[in-house]
Image (cartoon, rainbow, N blue to C red; front, top):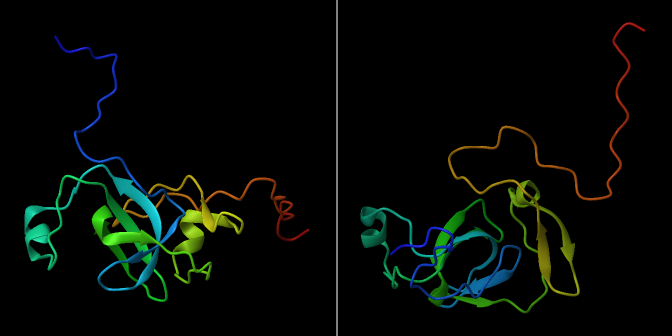
Length: 142
């Protein structure tokens, strides 16, 4: 019997990384910032088979903003390690998904803007907590 009150957990590995953590690719050496993850590879078969490394699909995969570029990539957990350098990440989409940095934890603070490549959010990202809002502008002509 299936109990619909219990959550579904795939038979994959637990995620080792969380959004906001800075990582580096073990083979290619680039640094990046984790935005989101999937419990297993969600890429199409054609994309997966064109991937040079073809790591196991049945492990967490991460959406990563590549430091110092305009690129975002999709990387298997087995190809990542934490980056302990503490160096800042530079990426044009960083402020869309993050609102600050916890320097003690070397972690960026993720906002609520969903990761949805190819479909930009309907509204600008929310202001960080405790940020004063600008006062409304007076009507034109007054």
